Image 1 (cartoon, rainbow, N blue to C red):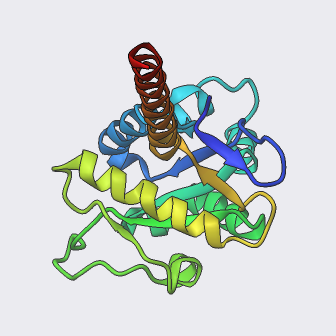
Image 2 (image 1 turned 180 degrees about the vertical axis):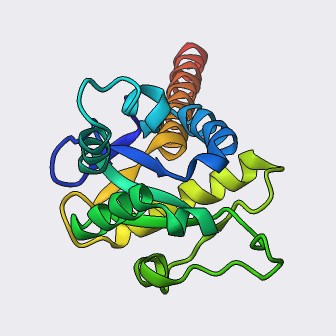
Length: 202
């Protein structure tokens, strides 16, 4: 199972799309691996996205967006200046996909604090971003990212957006259910033994 479920029927072919500028490729690839570890479908261009596509880069990017439940954009100064990144995220925004920003840069090359501006600032304005400025403790940052994806998808108004991550929650629910059944069985066995003892003693 992909770990993604829709309120309006099964849509398990949906994925999280990672949108980034190539300077962050190594770090984003680590994020990709960590998300996969949570049994969630995730799309990255070099992991069967663009690299495994027989058509053009634009067609592959479009398929990545169209198959996404949520698009995570790793914002940097170069991301904001990239025509491909602009086309990708604008298409995701126009298509009604849930967008979760990730801050991938602390300061610009000239030493100023990086802030999303222009088209990128407009699309991500008012959205909570996840801090990926530092590449340490990536597992913790990915968990924060997945939690934000859950929260944003729960608030979405479109059928595609009303999708919930069930990964760990689903496993936890099954574990609790199994524990409850086990206790019930033990209780029943104890009751039967007690009744049997009472019958033998009378």
